[in-house]
Image (cartoon, rainbow, N blue to C red; front, top):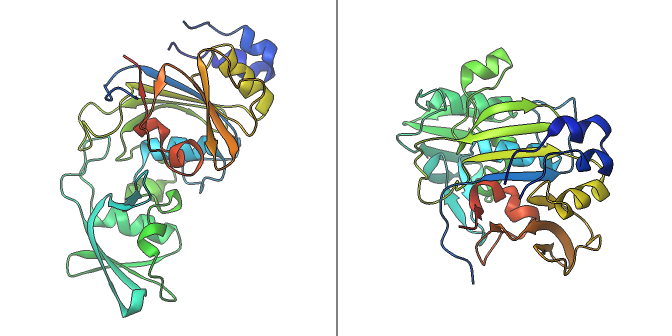
Length: 283
């Protein structure tokens, strides 16, 4: 799985551009290594890391770089994220989150409660410190708020980077090597992460935003990417070396056989848009 020639992809946004790109040559247990390339919809040149992601390109990139207080596993269960425990009060109007210890940003600095407070406030929530926990006070009771806290709209950033309007460091499995808004993202696996052995199998991750679904289908058909989000089969069904995964009854994505995933995947597109951390390369 070699690197995408983004200049060719972006110059025309067509299948002809893809042809000019550099060519590439029950599941086994995950193993570290490899370079994952994905063609995704939803790129917007006006987006930045502070944008609440709507399109799949930015959703996938933010999930790789930034984390949330809680996480939703592939089986739909709620799991600890940056918080390792939480309690509700007042029928779910008040939520206290206890932060996990030993969480580091990509620059080596430790996650602080102030970072979480600034992030939640930037998302429009009322947040404060209470008895050593991060307290979120809602306008109305919401017993399902911990599930909402797993959404990328409530990702946690460094407080000083929020103030500067320039996000560079997350706590996720991949650090930013290059980001071109609405076009491409290159991420590098953090050398040592608290999720080692559990997630984040690829050494590097490359996402390219391609608005035309037919071009995304051609990109995976011709071997320029390993994963493409799709809404139809585009004659890929039954093609050697490619398999389709479904979102409900509809096609959700195509991936090359070199890419593996667990038997159980998330119900939403591309494994809850967490394919970058959950999938791995065939040995």
